[in-house]
Length: 96
Image (cartoon, rainbow, N blue to C red; front, side):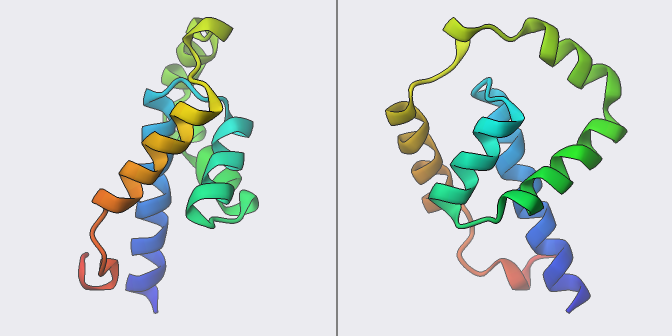
């Protein structure tokens, strides 16, 4: 079970990193992963918070550099997340 949990957390982390590439806020990321990847917002929030702790300087700069016009529309976000999910390995339990 430990490997499965670690694999799941790594998948959530990977999806959060994709959200960061798309200039999403934490709230946008939580909503997108809940809606499109069926990941509970509390899990996304917890993993995001741990990433913030580990990468404090990055997240400070990320927050400063964000602006409304940099964000993707809901439709673009939906397409990109569906693409990410379809490209993810189907059997993540076998990967370590």
